[in-house]
Image (cartoon, rainbow over all chains, first blue to last red; front, side, top):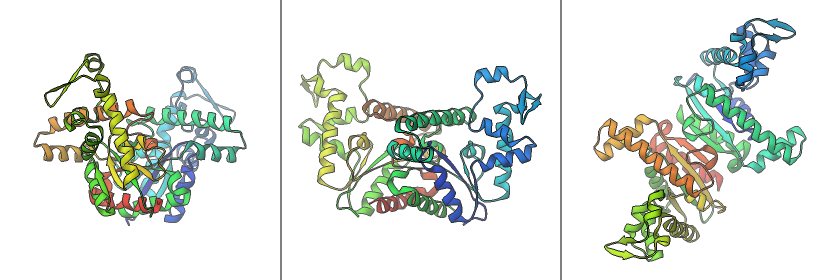
Length: 205
Length: 205
């Protein structure tokens, strides 16, 4: 296998895509970046992590674009709306993803990493989905909520992720042609899907 | 592996999806139905194959729906516009697909087979795509045409296939969640993709 490999994972909310990514990183002995990416972006940019968390995988609304004449972070007034808009933060996060990909092999979950690294020859992109039933059960179990609340969170979070992805890339979230491989977790389960993707990576590289 | 398996393959035009399906069927020692399905539908319905070919993977246009007050097949006037509309032919073809799936293991290419067999527990659905460059070269080589003509055929045929799929199913053509596995042929090539899908089938069943 190549010395450096970067695997990006897009995922439906509640599909177990993050877990597949974590297991895959462990099986291959490489780094794993999901929320961890926000700390990297914060460290590199000098901005606080809370700022990245607030904007995580979201686009600015038209209203927030109009209102960001200033911004507060950890109680301090930040006077640079351009930099601290979600668009500005996306730029910092994209730089952090590119730097990571130059430094180490890793799995990166979400955050348009597949698009940011589209010209990187050692990057493979994946999209993970699952049946509504499995996703509902997973969300209910994680968040201790009922069926209706889980269904609503699934709908809202997928919508937010799709809007974020479609806004920042020239591609469409969840469309097969946007990724190298997409897979329905309900066929092989979390462990089986992880092993299968690992096999694909080994065949590809 | 199970005694009976049905594999359906959706594919971008020029992606090599048909060839992957043919090789997969050969490797598994099971039947292969692409255009072959039209002969089955013709035989079962008693209608002529030419009628199915004319409607193959196409929806009726609004105009043709309005005009099909009669229909000619092999030079004979057919007085049953309802049956011979593309909607009517889709019904015959769907029955043929369901009968096939009851009788033998096989690979079925296109024709909304994944949707028609959605409740069949031994059916797995795939979608094959490839880079625009590879698809263009494949179409040029098959049809002896230039770059521009290949690009235009790719655009038109994908559009027609998507319209047909979206019209007859509750799903969206080419969207990851519509299939169990989707794969970009450019990573492993035709032979490698075939072997990889075969491996998925063996792991699933």
